[in-house]
Image 1 (cartoon, rainbow, N blue to C red):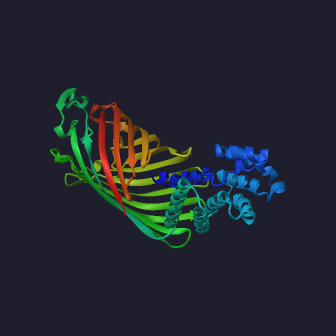
Image 2 (image 1 turned 180 degrees about the horizontal axis):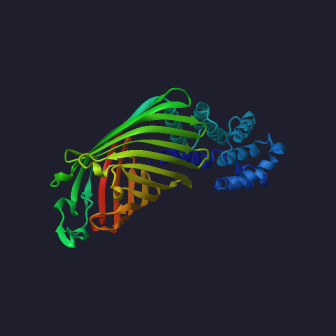
Image 3 (image 1 turned 30 degrees about the vertical axis):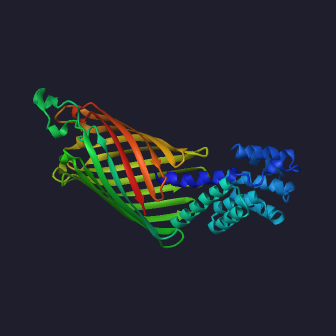
Length: 445
Protein backbone atom coordinates (compact mmCIF):
# COMPACT_ATOMS: atom_id res chain seq x y z
CA UNK A 1 0.00 0.00 0.00
CA UNK A 2 1.57 3.45 -1.04
CA UNK A 3 0.02 5.20 1.99
CA UNK A 4 1.38 2.63 4.50
CA UNK A 5 5.12 3.46 3.99
CA UNK A 6 4.51 7.15 4.77
CA UNK A 7 2.75 6.24 8.02
CA UNK A 8 5.66 3.99 9.00
CA UNK A 9 7.72 7.17 9.23
CA UNK A 10 5.12 8.79 11.47
CA UNK A 11 5.02 5.74 13.77
CA UNK A 12 8.78 5.97 14.12
CA UNK A 13 8.40 9.61 15.08
CA UNK A 14 6.03 8.56 17.85
CA UNK A 15 8.54 6.01 19.12
CA UNK A 16 11.24 8.67 19.26
CA UNK A 17 8.80 10.86 21.18
CA UNK A 18 8.13 8.19 23.80
CA UNK A 19 11.79 7.25 24.27
CA UNK A 20 12.65 8.97 27.56
CA UNK A 21 16.31 9.72 27.09
CA UNK A 22 16.27 11.99 30.14
CA UNK A 23 13.16 11.21 32.24
CA UNK A 24 11.96 14.67 33.16
CA UNK A 25 9.60 13.40 35.81
CA UNK A 26 12.60 12.36 37.89
CA UNK A 27 13.81 15.94 38.27
CA UNK A 28 12.79 17.39 41.61
CA UNK A 29 12.52 20.91 40.21
CA UNK A 30 9.80 20.00 37.68
CA UNK A 31 6.57 21.60 38.87
CA UNK A 32 3.09 20.11 38.87
CA UNK A 33 2.04 21.82 35.62
CA UNK A 34 4.96 20.39 33.68
CA UNK A 35 4.56 16.93 35.25
CA UNK A 36 0.89 16.87 34.31
CA UNK A 37 1.62 17.92 30.72
CA UNK A 38 4.39 15.34 30.39
CA UNK A 39 2.07 12.59 31.62
CA UNK A 40 -0.56 13.64 29.09
CA UNK A 41 1.96 13.73 26.24
CA UNK A 42 3.42 10.32 27.04
CA UNK A 43 -0.13 8.93 27.27
CA UNK A 44 -0.71 10.04 23.67
CA UNK A 45 -2.82 13.08 24.61
CA UNK A 46 -0.61 15.66 22.95
CA UNK A 47 -3.42 18.10 22.26
CA UNK A 48 -4.39 18.25 25.93
CA UNK A 49 -0.75 18.76 26.92
CA UNK A 50 -0.27 21.49 24.34
CA UNK A 51 -3.45 23.33 25.36
CA UNK A 52 -2.32 23.16 28.99
CA UNK A 53 1.11 24.69 28.34
CA UNK A 54 0.56 27.06 25.42
CA UNK A 55 -1.04 29.88 27.48
CA UNK A 56 2.02 29.83 29.76
CA UNK A 57 4.69 29.97 27.05
CA UNK A 58 5.35 33.72 27.18
CA UNK A 59 5.79 33.66 30.96
CA UNK A 60 7.68 30.35 31.18
CA UNK A 61 9.86 30.54 28.03
CA UNK A 62 13.47 29.89 29.02
CA UNK A 63 12.62 27.30 31.69
CA UNK A 64 14.23 24.18 30.15
CA UNK A 65 11.81 21.74 31.76
CA UNK A 66 8.80 23.71 30.55
CA UNK A 67 10.29 24.22 27.09
CA UNK A 68 11.16 20.53 26.69
CA UNK A 69 7.66 19.31 27.49
CA UNK A 70 6.10 22.11 25.46
CA UNK A 71 8.28 21.05 22.50
CA UNK A 72 7.18 17.44 22.93
CA UNK A 73 3.50 18.43 22.94
CA UNK A 74 3.95 20.82 20.01
CA UNK A 75 5.51 18.00 17.97
CA UNK A 76 2.60 15.72 18.76
CA UNK A 77 0.02 18.17 17.45
CA UNK A 78 2.06 19.14 14.38
CA UNK A 79 3.12 22.60 15.59
CA UNK A 80 6.71 21.91 14.58
CA UNK A 81 7.78 25.54 14.21
CA UNK A 82 6.71 26.24 17.81
CA UNK A 83 8.54 23.09 18.90
CA UNK A 84 11.75 24.25 17.20
CA UNK A 85 11.74 27.56 19.07
CA UNK A 86 11.08 25.94 22.45
CA UNK A 87 13.61 23.15 22.03
CA UNK A 88 16.33 25.47 20.72
CA UNK A 89 15.93 27.44 23.96
CA UNK A 90 16.52 24.20 25.86
CA UNK A 91 19.67 23.38 23.92
CA UNK A 92 21.16 26.78 24.75
CA UNK A 93 21.11 26.04 28.48
CA UNK A 94 21.18 22.22 28.45
CA UNK A 95 23.31 21.19 25.46
CA UNK A 96 23.46 17.58 26.77
CA UNK A 97 19.70 17.16 27.04
CA UNK A 98 19.27 14.09 24.83
CA UNK A 99 15.48 14.11 25.00
CA UNK A 100 15.32 17.69 23.81
CA UNK A 101 17.89 16.98 21.08
CA UNK A 102 15.91 14.01 19.74
CA UNK A 103 12.66 16.01 19.82
CA UNK A 104 14.37 18.93 18.07
CA UNK A 105 15.44 16.48 15.36
CA UNK A 106 11.84 15.46 14.90
CA UNK A 107 10.70 19.08 14.81
CA UNK A 108 13.34 19.97 12.21
CA UNK A 109 12.11 17.17 9.99
CA UNK A 110 8.57 18.43 10.49
CA UNK A 111 9.49 21.87 9.12
CA UNK A 112 11.32 20.33 6.17
CA UNK A 113 14.94 20.54 7.37
CA UNK A 114 15.94 16.89 6.96
CA UNK A 115 19.67 17.66 7.10
CA UNK A 116 19.45 19.23 10.56
CA UNK A 117 17.11 16.46 11.70
CA UNK A 118 19.66 13.83 10.70
CA UNK A 119 22.48 15.65 12.49
CA UNK A 120 20.54 16.11 15.73
CA UNK A 121 19.35 12.50 15.88
CA UNK A 122 22.84 11.18 15.18
CA UNK A 123 24.19 13.37 18.01
CA UNK A 124 21.48 12.12 20.37
CA UNK A 125 22.59 8.58 19.62
CA UNK A 126 26.26 9.43 20.13
CA UNK A 127 25.45 11.04 23.49
CA UNK A 128 24.72 7.57 24.88
CA UNK A 129 21.10 6.74 24.15
CA UNK A 130 19.99 3.36 25.58
CA UNK A 131 20.22 0.46 23.11
CA UNK A 132 16.51 0.30 22.40
CA UNK A 133 16.34 4.07 21.84
CA UNK A 134 19.42 3.99 19.61
CA UNK A 135 17.75 1.33 17.47
CA UNK A 136 14.66 3.53 17.16
CA UNK A 137 16.80 6.52 16.14
CA UNK A 138 18.52 4.35 13.51
CA UNK A 139 15.12 3.46 12.08
CA UNK A 140 14.16 7.15 12.01
CA UNK A 141 17.42 8.05 10.26
CA UNK A 142 16.75 5.43 7.57
CA UNK A 143 13.24 6.84 7.15
CA UNK A 144 14.73 10.32 6.63
CA UNK A 145 17.03 8.91 3.97
CA UNK A 146 14.06 7.37 2.17
CA UNK A 147 12.09 10.60 2.40
CA UNK A 148 15.03 12.56 0.99
CA UNK A 149 15.34 10.03 -1.83
CA UNK A 150 11.71 10.71 -2.74
CA UNK A 151 12.71 14.30 -3.53
CA UNK A 152 15.56 13.30 -5.83
CA UNK A 153 15.73 11.83 -9.30
CA UNK A 154 15.99 8.08 -9.23
CA UNK A 155 14.23 4.80 -9.83
CA UNK A 156 13.12 1.71 -7.94
CA UNK A 157 12.23 -1.74 -9.14
CA UNK A 158 11.16 -5.19 -8.03
CA UNK A 159 10.85 -8.79 -9.13
CA UNK A 160 8.50 -11.29 -7.54
CA UNK A 161 7.24 -14.83 -7.70
CA UNK A 162 3.85 -16.21 -6.63
CA UNK A 163 2.49 -19.69 -5.95
CA UNK A 164 -1.03 -20.57 -4.87
CA UNK A 165 -4.46 -21.85 -5.81
CA UNK A 166 -7.61 -20.36 -7.34
CA UNK A 167 -11.01 -21.95 -6.69
CA UNK A 168 -12.61 -20.29 -9.72
CA UNK A 169 -10.01 -19.26 -12.27
CA UNK A 170 -12.72 -18.78 -14.92
CA UNK A 171 -14.84 -16.48 -12.68
CA UNK A 172 -17.81 -18.55 -13.84
CA UNK A 173 -21.01 -19.91 -12.28
CA UNK A 174 -21.05 -23.27 -10.54
CA UNK A 175 -23.86 -24.65 -12.73
CA UNK A 176 -23.03 -25.13 -16.41
CA UNK A 177 -26.69 -25.55 -17.49
CA UNK A 178 -28.51 -22.24 -17.96
CA UNK A 179 -32.08 -21.43 -19.00
CA UNK A 180 -32.08 -18.59 -21.55
CA UNK A 181 -35.35 -16.57 -21.73
CA UNK A 182 -34.58 -15.29 -25.23
CA UNK A 183 -34.64 -18.91 -26.42
CA UNK A 184 -37.99 -19.60 -24.80
CA UNK A 185 -36.44 -20.77 -21.54
CA UNK A 186 -34.44 -23.48 -23.28
CA UNK A 187 -31.64 -24.90 -21.14
CA UNK A 188 -28.25 -24.70 -22.81
CA UNK A 189 -24.86 -26.01 -21.70
CA UNK A 190 -22.17 -23.39 -21.21
CA UNK A 191 -18.71 -23.83 -22.64
CA UNK A 192 -16.70 -25.75 -20.00
CA UNK A 193 -14.22 -22.89 -19.88
CA UNK A 194 -17.03 -20.56 -18.76
CA UNK A 195 -17.97 -22.72 -15.76
CA UNK A 196 -16.32 -22.63 -12.34
CA UNK A 197 -12.93 -24.35 -12.38
CA UNK A 198 -10.20 -24.55 -9.76
CA UNK A 199 -6.54 -24.32 -10.70
CA UNK A 200 -3.02 -24.09 -9.36
CA UNK A 201 -1.34 -20.74 -9.83
CA UNK A 202 2.29 -19.83 -10.58
CA UNK A 203 3.21 -16.25 -11.28
CA UNK A 204 6.13 -14.02 -12.14
CA UNK A 205 6.16 -10.25 -11.97
CA UNK A 206 8.50 -7.31 -12.36
CA UNK A 207 8.22 -3.56 -12.29
CA UNK A 208 10.09 -0.29 -12.26
CA UNK A 209 9.10 3.23 -11.24
CA UNK A 210 11.12 6.40 -11.64
CA UNK A 211 11.12 10.12 -10.97
CA UNK A 212 13.08 12.87 -12.72
CA UNK A 213 13.17 16.02 -10.62
CA UNK A 214 13.00 19.24 -12.66
CA UNK A 215 12.96 21.49 -9.58
CA UNK A 216 11.89 21.25 -5.93
CA UNK A 217 8.24 21.16 -6.93
CA UNK A 218 7.95 19.71 -10.43
CA UNK A 219 8.91 16.17 -11.45
CA UNK A 220 8.39 13.77 -14.31
CA UNK A 221 7.20 10.35 -13.16
CA UNK A 222 6.67 7.01 -14.87
CA UNK A 223 6.67 3.27 -14.48
CA UNK A 224 6.04 -0.12 -16.00
CA UNK A 225 4.80 -3.42 -14.57
CA UNK A 226 4.48 -6.88 -16.12
CA UNK A 227 2.81 -9.98 -14.68
CA UNK A 228 2.62 -13.53 -16.00
CA UNK A 229 0.22 -16.13 -14.59
CA UNK A 230 0.51 -19.82 -15.41
CA UNK A 231 -2.04 -22.51 -14.52
CA UNK A 232 -0.74 -26.07 -15.05
CA UNK A 233 -3.45 -28.24 -16.61
CA UNK A 234 -5.61 -25.21 -17.44
CA UNK A 235 -3.43 -23.41 -19.95
CA UNK A 236 -6.41 -21.70 -21.57
CA UNK A 237 -6.44 -19.37 -18.53
CA UNK A 238 -2.76 -18.48 -18.68
CA UNK A 239 -2.54 -14.70 -18.86
CA UNK A 240 -0.10 -11.86 -19.25
CA UNK A 241 -0.54 -8.22 -18.28
CA UNK A 242 1.61 -5.22 -19.16
CA UNK A 243 0.94 -1.76 -17.74
CA UNK A 244 2.90 1.45 -18.36
CA UNK A 245 2.31 5.00 -17.21
CA UNK A 246 3.97 8.39 -17.43
CA UNK A 247 3.18 11.92 -16.38
CA UNK A 248 4.00 14.82 -14.07
CA UNK A 249 3.92 15.47 -10.33
CA UNK A 250 3.73 18.87 -8.64
CA UNK A 251 4.32 19.44 -4.93
CA UNK A 252 3.30 22.51 -2.96
CA UNK A 253 3.97 22.32 0.78
CA UNK A 254 2.00 19.27 1.94
CA UNK A 255 -0.04 18.90 -1.26
CA UNK A 256 0.90 16.79 -4.26
CA UNK A 257 -0.84 16.78 -7.64
CA UNK A 258 -0.15 14.11 -10.27
CA UNK A 259 -1.43 13.51 -13.78
CA UNK A 260 -0.39 10.40 -15.70
CA UNK A 261 -1.30 8.72 -18.96
CA UNK A 262 -1.79 4.95 -18.66
CA UNK A 263 -1.77 1.94 -20.96
CA UNK A 264 -2.78 -1.55 -19.84
CA UNK A 265 -2.85 -4.65 -22.06
CA UNK A 266 -4.35 -7.90 -20.75
CA UNK A 267 -3.84 -11.09 -22.78
CA UNK A 268 -5.08 -14.61 -22.11
CA UNK A 269 -3.65 -17.73 -23.69
CA UNK A 270 -1.71 -15.58 -26.17
CA UNK A 271 -4.67 -13.44 -27.27
CA UNK A 272 -5.18 -9.81 -26.32
CA UNK A 273 -8.53 -9.61 -24.53
CA UNK A 274 -8.61 -6.05 -23.21
CA UNK A 275 -6.67 -2.85 -23.86
CA UNK A 276 -7.21 0.12 -21.56
CA UNK A 277 -5.84 3.59 -22.28
CA UNK A 278 -6.55 6.59 -20.10
CA UNK A 279 -5.66 9.44 -17.80
CA UNK A 280 -5.49 9.53 -13.99
CA UNK A 281 -5.39 12.84 -12.11
CA UNK A 282 -4.84 12.71 -8.34
CA UNK A 283 -4.48 15.10 -5.40
CA UNK A 284 -3.05 14.10 -2.03
CA UNK A 285 -2.87 16.24 1.11
CA UNK A 286 -0.44 15.25 3.88
CA UNK A 287 -0.77 18.35 6.04
CA UNK A 288 -1.83 16.49 9.19
CA UNK A 289 0.78 14.64 11.25
CA UNK A 290 -1.14 11.38 11.52
CA UNK A 291 -3.51 11.40 8.57
CA UNK A 292 -3.79 12.11 4.87
CA UNK A 293 -6.59 12.42 2.38
CA UNK A 294 -7.03 12.89 -1.32
CA UNK A 295 -9.19 12.70 -4.41
CA UNK A 296 -8.79 11.35 -7.92
CA UNK A 297 -10.36 11.30 -11.38
CA UNK A 298 -9.89 8.45 -13.86
CA UNK A 299 -10.92 8.46 -17.48
CA UNK A 300 -10.16 5.58 -19.84
CA UNK A 301 -11.26 3.73 -22.95
CA UNK A 302 -11.64 -0.05 -22.71
CA UNK A 303 -11.22 -1.82 -26.02
CA UNK A 304 -11.89 -5.56 -26.49
CA UNK A 305 -10.05 -6.82 -29.60
CA UNK A 306 -12.27 -9.14 -31.61
CA UNK A 307 -15.38 -8.02 -29.68
CA UNK A 308 -15.55 -4.28 -30.21
CA UNK A 309 -19.29 -4.22 -29.40
CA UNK A 310 -18.15 -4.46 -25.76
CA UNK A 311 -16.01 -1.29 -25.97
CA UNK A 312 -16.81 1.34 -23.33
CA UNK A 313 -15.58 4.69 -22.06
CA UNK A 314 -15.04 4.61 -18.28
CA UNK A 315 -15.08 7.57 -15.86
CA UNK A 316 -14.51 7.24 -12.09
CA UNK A 317 -14.15 9.86 -9.35
CA UNK A 318 -13.29 9.07 -5.76
CA UNK A 319 -11.77 10.10 -2.48
CA UNK A 320 -9.58 8.44 0.14
CA UNK A 321 -8.58 8.93 3.76
CA UNK A 322 -5.88 7.28 5.85
CA UNK A 323 -5.35 7.58 9.59
CA UNK A 324 -2.66 6.42 11.97
CA UNK A 325 -4.20 4.38 14.80
CA UNK A 326 -1.86 4.38 17.77
CA UNK A 327 1.79 3.50 17.32
CA UNK A 328 1.41 0.28 15.36
CA UNK A 329 -1.58 0.52 13.04
CA UNK A 330 -2.88 2.44 10.03
CA UNK A 331 -6.42 2.43 8.67
CA UNK A 332 -7.76 3.68 5.36
CA UNK A 333 -11.08 4.19 3.63
CA UNK A 334 -12.20 5.24 0.19
CA UNK A 335 -15.38 5.84 -1.77
CA UNK A 336 -15.91 6.21 -5.49
CA UNK A 337 -18.56 6.40 -8.18
CA UNK A 338 -18.53 6.35 -11.94
CA UNK A 339 -19.97 4.99 -15.14
CA UNK A 340 -19.13 3.05 -18.26
CA UNK A 341 -20.77 4.05 -21.53
CA UNK A 342 -20.90 1.82 -24.61
CA UNK A 343 -19.20 3.28 -27.66
CA UNK A 344 -21.36 1.30 -30.13
CA UNK A 345 -24.92 2.49 -30.82
CA UNK A 346 -27.60 0.10 -29.61
CA UNK A 347 -25.38 -1.54 -26.99
CA UNK A 348 -26.33 0.52 -23.95
CA UNK A 349 -26.72 -2.67 -21.90
CA UNK A 350 -22.93 -3.09 -22.03
CA UNK A 351 -22.47 0.06 -19.92
CA UNK A 352 -23.32 0.66 -16.29
CA UNK A 353 -23.17 3.03 -13.34
CA UNK A 354 -21.02 2.01 -10.40
CA UNK A 355 -20.57 2.97 -6.75
CA UNK A 356 -18.23 1.43 -4.24
CA UNK A 357 -16.09 1.72 -1.16
CA UNK A 358 -12.86 0.30 0.25
CA UNK A 359 -11.90 -0.24 3.88
CA UNK A 360 -8.69 -1.65 5.25
CA UNK A 361 -5.68 -1.34 7.42
CA UNK A 362 -2.43 -2.82 8.56
CA UNK A 363 -0.85 -3.45 11.95
CA UNK A 364 2.52 -4.49 13.29
CA UNK A 365 1.77 -7.86 14.93
CA UNK A 366 5.24 -9.23 15.72
CA UNK A 367 8.90 -8.67 14.99
CA UNK A 368 9.24 -8.24 11.20
CA UNK A 369 5.55 -9.11 10.68
CA UNK A 370 2.76 -6.79 9.58
CA UNK A 371 -0.81 -8.01 9.20
CA UNK A 372 -3.28 -6.43 6.79
CA UNK A 373 -6.94 -6.72 5.89
CA UNK A 374 -9.17 -5.15 3.26
CA UNK A 375 -12.82 -5.10 2.28
CA UNK A 376 -14.15 -3.75 -1.02
CA UNK A 377 -17.72 -3.47 -2.26
CA UNK A 378 -19.05 -2.35 -5.63
CA UNK A 379 -22.56 -2.07 -7.03
CA UNK A 380 -23.08 -2.02 -10.79
CA UNK A 381 -26.41 -1.07 -12.31
CA UNK A 382 -26.49 -1.59 -16.08
CA UNK A 383 -27.99 0.82 -18.57
CA UNK A 384 -30.32 -1.38 -20.60
CA UNK A 385 -32.08 -4.72 -20.89
CA UNK A 386 -29.83 -7.68 -21.57
CA UNK A 387 -31.11 -9.14 -24.87
CA UNK A 388 -30.57 -12.80 -23.84
CA UNK A 389 -32.03 -12.70 -20.34
CA UNK A 390 -34.63 -9.89 -20.80
CA UNK A 391 -33.66 -8.10 -17.57
CA UNK A 392 -31.57 -5.09 -16.59
CA UNK A 393 -28.46 -6.57 -15.05
CA UNK A 394 -27.49 -5.67 -11.46
CA UNK A 395 -24.31 -6.87 -9.76
CA UNK A 396 -23.11 -6.57 -6.17
CA UNK A 397 -19.46 -7.54 -5.71
CA UNK A 398 -17.69 -7.94 -2.36
CA UNK A 399 -14.08 -8.96 -1.74
CA UNK A 400 -12.45 -9.69 1.61
CA UNK A 401 -8.65 -10.03 1.78
CA UNK A 402 -6.47 -11.07 4.72
CA UNK A 403 -2.71 -11.45 4.78
CA UNK A 404 0.64 -10.59 6.26
CA UNK A 405 4.03 -9.22 5.21
CA UNK A 406 7.32 -10.57 6.54
CA UNK A 407 10.26 -8.20 6.19
CA UNK A 408 12.96 -10.15 8.01
CA UNK A 409 15.48 -9.94 5.16
CA UNK A 410 16.79 -6.71 3.67
CA UNK A 411 14.99 -5.77 0.44
CA UNK A 412 12.78 -8.90 0.63
CA UNK A 413 9.10 -9.22 1.46
CA UNK A 414 7.21 -12.51 1.85
CA UNK A 415 3.41 -12.16 1.76
CA UNK A 416 0.94 -14.99 2.41
CA UNK A 417 -2.60 -13.92 1.55
CA UNK A 418 -6.15 -15.20 1.12
CA UNK A 419 -8.98 -13.40 -0.64
CA UNK A 420 -12.64 -14.27 -1.11
CA UNK A 421 -14.84 -12.68 -3.79
CA UNK A 422 -18.61 -12.96 -4.05
CA UNK A 423 -20.54 -11.53 -6.98
CA UNK A 424 -24.31 -11.58 -6.63
CA UNK A 425 -26.03 -10.95 -9.96
CA UNK A 426 -29.58 -11.27 -11.26
CA UNK A 427 -28.12 -12.90 -14.39
CA UNK A 428 -26.99 -16.40 -13.53
CA UNK A 429 -23.90 -16.53 -15.74
CA UNK A 430 -22.49 -13.51 -13.89
CA UNK A 431 -23.17 -14.89 -10.40
CA UNK A 432 -20.13 -16.57 -8.82
CA UNK A 433 -17.79 -16.92 -5.86
CA UNK A 434 -14.01 -17.27 -5.82
CA UNK A 435 -11.29 -17.97 -3.25
CA UNK A 436 -7.60 -17.39 -3.92
CA UNK A 437 -4.79 -18.47 -1.59
CA UNK A 438 -1.22 -17.60 -2.49
CA UNK A 439 2.23 -16.61 -1.25
CA UNK A 440 4.32 -13.94 -2.97
CA UNK A 441 8.05 -13.33 -2.52
CA UNK A 442 9.23 -9.89 -3.68
CA UNK A 443 12.77 -8.57 -4.03
CA UNK A 444 13.14 -4.80 -4.26
CA UNK A 445 16.13 -3.05 -5.79
